[in-house]
Image (cartoon, rainbow, N blue to C red; front, side, top):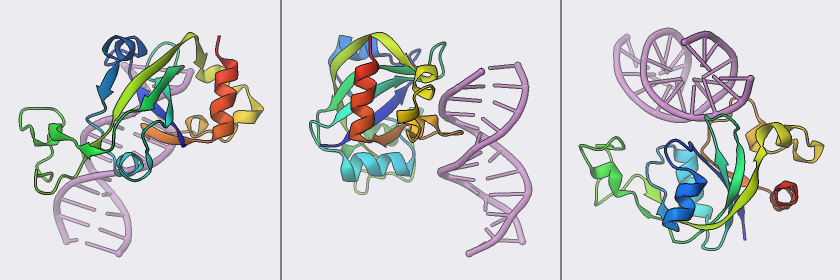
Length: 151
DNA sequence: GCCAACGTTGGC
DNA sequence: GCCAACGTTGGC
């Protein structure tokens, strides 16, 4: 079992949206490193911190879990869509996605500010300056630590 | 809205 | 295959 953190802008798709739909296909990832994590390393049942970015209080707001094998991201084939990539074909898909399933919404945000105050979390990717990866691995100990911080 | 960080693109 | 230009991300 591995642990992850995924970012989402709550204006676009929040933990409340996640809870409302139950399961969501995580389309639109157009970064090779993030794609490789989904394609090569994620397994069904992996636990995932759900992080709100680009908002008033950035931080971890809940838990989801990996609910599918990786499969081609069909939004890359939609010429009208914003995720269109002419280099991705149905014969040779360049981008993949997985499904995430809602597990839990925290009573309170575990804010980035709070995360930065914890010596034990010094090595989390989310604390690195200029971090832009939307999907990152999380160490088991860090995952548990975040859970202990939730309201 | 600013700006630093950084991945991607394209000219050479 | 280098690297400058560009676009995007995301905290502040």
